[in-house]
Length: 160
Ligand SMILES: [Zn+2]
Image 1: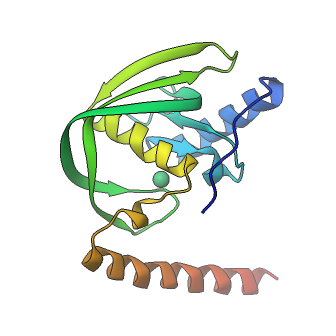
Image 2 (image 1 turned 45 degrees about the horizontal axis):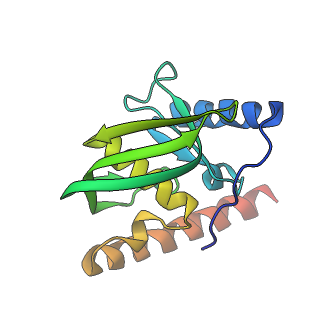
C-alpha cells in the first residue's frame, strides 16, 4: 500500500474533487471518505459525523495527534463492504489540516469524531481496517475479500 501524495495546488479541480467526494460519502451513507477511495492518490479526505452534507468538512494534508485511552469499537469501511471488526482507536484526536483555500485549521474530536479522523488518516497512509483486525477477524475478512473479488470479476466479465 502506498502513501498518498500531498496536495500542492488549491484550485477549482480540487474543489470539484472535494464536492464529488462529499456526494459519494453521503450517497453511500458513510461518515468519511479519503482521496485514494475516490481513485485519487492525494492527501485529502472528507468527513461528516452524522453523514449529512451540511456537516461535511474537507481536510487537506492533515496531521493528527492522538491521545487518551485506547477504545475498541466496531468499525467498517466503504471500500470493504461486508467487512467490519473491532478496531482499537484513541479516544481523542487533534487534527491540523488545510481547507480548500489552503488555510490551516485545527480541530479536536472525541469518540466517533476521533475515530473518523484516525480511520481516514489511515487511508492516506495506505492502511485499511483489514490491516488492524485481530487474527480471527482477519481470516473472516480474507474470505469476504476473496468473495468481493469474485463478485467484481463476475460483474466485470458480464459487462465486457
Ligand atoms: Zn475506510
